[in-house]
Amino acid sequence: MQSREAENINVEEEYKRRTHRCEEIGTGLTGEEITVNGWVQRLRDHGSLLFIDLRDRSGVIQVVFDQSVDKELFAKAENLGSEDVISVTGIISSRPEENINPEITTGKVELEADRLELISHSQTPPFEVEDKTRATERVRLEHRYLDLRRPRMLEIMKKKHQVMQATRNFLSTSGYWEIETPILTKSTPEGARDYLVPSRLHRGNFYALPQSPQLFKQLLMAGGVEQYFQIAKCFRDEDLRANRQPEFMQIDIETSFIDVESFMSEMENLMGEIFAVADIEIPEKFDVISYQEAMERYGSDSPDTRFDLEIEDLSDIFSDSDFNLFSDTIAEGGTVRGIKLADGADMSRSQIDKYEDFVKELGAAGLINFAVKETEIASPVAKFISSEELKSLKNKLSAEKGDMIFVIAGEIDLTLKCLGDLRLKLAEDYSLIPENEYDFLWVVDFPLFGYNKKEDRIESEHHPFAAPLPEDEEMISENPLDVRSQAYDMVINGEEVGGGSVRISDADLQKEVFELLGFSPEEVEEKFGFMIEALEHGAPPHGGIAFGLDRIVMLLTGSDSIRDVIAFPKTQNASSPLTGAPGEVTGKQLEELNLKVDDK
Image 1 (cartoon, rainbow, N blue to C red):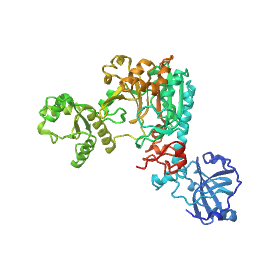
Image 2: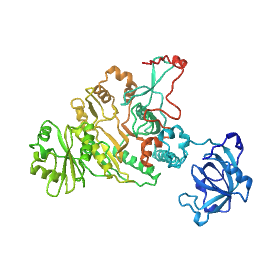
Image 3: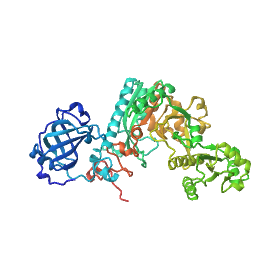
Image 4: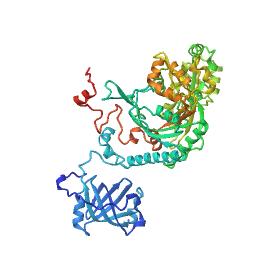
């Protein structure tokens, strides 16, 4: 890369506008004069010939400057540097056979330049603007405007745009109206922490940025809209992971007079339109399993079903075992579960210890292994297990010579969680997850409530507005933890990409749910009085779903991090290396808001 003083560069205030983008250039334009505008990707000096790769958002075209044809133009081109913005006019010519570049769409042609204009000079970039950059993510985020120029990033942004367009087209054609909902709203308990905005006009009061448009889309149903959607910006002040951001985009959908089966089918068709953007065919119908089945078989309510390694219940085999760890655990209401890793019996002791440490960190008491050998099943606890129990263990898991069985005994929920996470780790370590495969799944019949042991209270499994299954509704007051909801999650490759439910449309039932969650009548009136009142004025039965747009694009493009599919994302600590947000504000601003910063 060259470094030049900006004052020595002649920048054109007026320049010739493009006639073609790079993606539009091919052999059909041979012999024609065209103009292209873009960035200097790289320069290659071959003596009397100078080659410049000019890049726009659609691709790259090779531009040739011939010193023997125009010395002044050649000298001007020699002074260009990486990432300068230029306009080039010239004649399209076919490349010699030996110079064809099959890696780019314009690889059969080149542009013989006869005019060059420097539109904007670039300082030497801090990293190569190429897909195979050596820059760290931190550096790329600090200079995101440069990072976005990389072909990979531009392709992701294009795909995201196409996904939003496909979504809008499909839903609009299906009768949905796109309606915006407020960004400045009221804080309500929806699971995560709210981002709060102090009010200048209402001193001491705060707006909250919406975690979702949940209440407003239900109010739209009460308002007679019947079918609504929105590509909404949402905010959650929570700890970040690879697939989480403090602000994110959500495809929000709600419909009145809902028929769940028809609605789920409609959403499957929407996914078909979205994945068609990347020329990916998906099944017309998705598999459906219950929450209970997902947990029992995979140890997760968003299971990755692209591979086996299913969990098996071994409690019936060991309920009367002489191995007290198993039999006592079962007698105390716990469980014994296991998974089989095909061809894993030759695993080293250090590898086994690694997996045991892994599940212990998750809370398991330990991990017991059984290696299926030629004439025996080897295990550290084999002497405590009867031959009949070992035979039943082998049969239950359909284990064969060379297989490894891992078993955990403990409380049911914890055991399933630990084996579910171990299942994923084994699949990754042993390359059991097929690439370029998309597995779609509906998980239904979630519990309506969960129990928060730490706070010793009942809480909503999804949110307080999900309706119970009609056959379970009568159990709400006496056995709330046994009540299932009319909730449904869409899962792709082990990632929950959408969650929805039929909503409570009866005011009395909604009040009963709030009461079970510990809200006093006064709190209900203060936080949700407007919602209760809407339900009391003829609300139709309704339901919907919200899809994580960024997460879908992440899967669609094969991105490792959700930060790659957001133009200007935050880091793991919710800050922006580009802008420096969050930042301090002036004392005057704080005074206007009646705020004071406590430095403690």
